[in-house]
Structures are given as C-alpha cells and as structure tokens.
Image 1: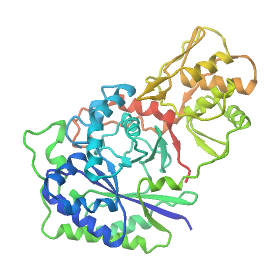
Image 2 (image 1 turned 120 degrees about the vertical axis):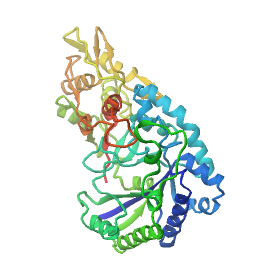
Image 3 (image 1 turned 90 degrees about the vertical axis):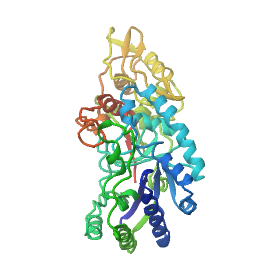
Image 4 (image 1 turned 60 degrees about the horizontal axis):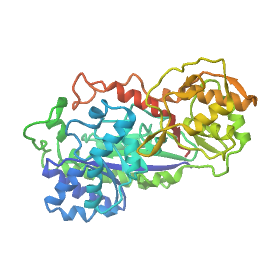
Length: 447
C-alpha cells in the first residue's frame, strides 16, 4: 500500500483584519485538539502585529507547529517578482537578501523558532529568493506556482527541497459543501509514484473569516493605498463552519492507515538518496549517453542536477575526487564563440573546475569560459567534456549542447493578468529567463 504524506500548510499574513487573528487562534486550537502539526508560513509583519496586540494566547501555541518565512510585508509593492525583475540572478539574490534578511531574523526572534521553509506571497515567484533563503539557512520551499514543476512531484532547485507544482494540491474555497469537495479531491488524488505520494493541502486564516483577501482589497493593480482597510467579514457563524469542515476532513483522512501528516522538513526524510560513491565507470556510462541535451541524470544510485554533472566531468578529467558540487546557473544564456576546431581536454577541464562566479559565497557557472582562443558556454563545455571522457583523446572538437532541463519551465507563463495584485501590463520576462537558467540546479527528488 502506498503511503500518503500530507503537507498541511497555512499562509499567515493578514495583519489588517483583527478578526483573522481569532480565526487563526481557533484554527490552532482545532489542530492541537486532533494532534495534527501544520507548516505555518508567517509574514513578519503579521507576527509583529500579534505581539503588539498582546495575542500571547496565539504565540504560545506556535511551538506545536513548524514555522516558515513568507516575506517581511507580503503584499506591499514592490513584491519580490516586481523588484527582482530589474536585476540579474546574482545581484537580485543579493537584493532579496538585503531586503528580507532583517525581517527573517525578526520573525525568528518573535516566534522563537528556526524558520524551516520559504514560500512567496501570492504568485510572486522569483528564483533569486531561493539562493537568498538558502543563505539564511532555509532547507525547503513550500508553495504552489505553475511556472515550474517536475512531473508533479517534489524536486530540488537551487539547493532547496522544493514542494511546488505538486500534482496533488487541495485548496478549499469554503463553499457550502466544502467537506464533501475536500473528501472527493482526496479520494481522487493521483497515486502515481513508487512508495510515497505527497498531497499538499493549504488555506489562509483570513479566508476562514473573510469574504475577500485582505491584500486584494488594498493592493490591487500594483498600487499601495494611502490608507489600508480590513477585509470584509463573513456572516456570523461561517468561521466556525469553515473550521469544522476542515476538522472533519482531517479526521476523515486520518482514518486511513496509510495517511500521515508531515511538515516541510519532515518531507525530506522520504527521499531515497544513494550513498554509494560515484565511480569513473558511472561517469563514463553517463558520458556515453550525452547527446547534446543537458539535464539531470541518475548516477551511482543518486540523482544529480546538470551543474553537479558538469563538476564531476571536470573533476574526472583533471584527476580529482569524484565529489559532485552544486553550482548555480549562469547569468545569461550566450552562444559560444569558437575560433579553433579542437580544444585541449586538460585546458577545458581545468577551466570548468577552476573558473566560476559567486553568489552570496556559493559557486556559479560562468556565462562563457575562456578556453584558448574560444569562449564556450556551460552547455557546450559539458558536452565537450563528455566527448573527451568517452574518447580518451587529448584534444576534442567542441560539442554543442542545450539545457533541456529548462524545458520543465513554462516559458509561456506571463506574470500580469493572472493575479489582481499585478499591474495588467506586468510581464517579468527577466524572472522567467532566470528561472530557466537556474535549471542547471534542477533534479527530481526520489521518493
């Protein structure tokens, strides 16, 4: 029987509507009454407001759950996608870190916990945030966004265990028959997978108490209001009905012997990671399979992203230990500039091993590598090194490559028009391109 691991998470963000505090308190009481731990994604300003309002009754219950970072001020413009679209990957990562690290630290101090995950506000995806929160010590990403997914399962991206684009995703809309809808969605979930199937269930305390999102009331179309308003409230008794529907759903699922509720970091336990060392023979077999399409691959019982494979080829050809190293994707996708028919194997391998940029201290692939008279991009470098390992010669012709791992990104996705907070004309093409380039770090989690 396949094991179903349920990620139950709540975005705790509405600092304008006091009634959302009461909704959150009642929600926490309900969860504790049935022994379910959730992942609580906190906006820093919300936690600070709870402290200011003297809601110690709420703060005392937080240690029963796992807490995550949901940015400092959530929906105040500019949102991460808006301001990071003006930056490259490296400078954008530094900018996100500069803007958000103080709020991250403040939130951790208020709740007295280590923050274990990150999730963006609304649809405000940005790849620079991954590297920045990794530097803050965050190991996982938990949210839902359609721009990137790997066959509907969890994956690794920029060094974070990422739970986004999961095929099994439930968000209650609080209709009159919501309990039946939730149960039906659970019963009809996709059970593809080897042993473990993930289900992501999420909600917002503000939705339990309000008829509209607090941020849609105040921050629509890219504007910040001069005066903020609380969200309109549901009719008396609806909050309690919404919580009761969720309680009944949780109990319904807990009756199944193969269902377990887990938090963001607990999800990492279920990955099957190979522990055997990678051998030269493993790498030679991989090199024989390289056909110009650069993506993740399984080697020696473990899954490796494209940049880890890049590092292994360089290490093998220079006689170094075969220890895979994660490198972030380059700043730009540039064509190689080739002036010689062949390149020395040792020279290209030493360039791949020894030349790199840095992002907050982490290594990053260069857009172009000087190799003799040539300037080669990382995809061509990888395919040429694979050719060298295959043939065993001292000089090889440059082989062309393409980062096919980037095909998992929806390149047609456009910000703007799909969320009321965006300006209608907002597109964020630079964010989409940066997302593709960071697929050098993409690989599926094996669960």
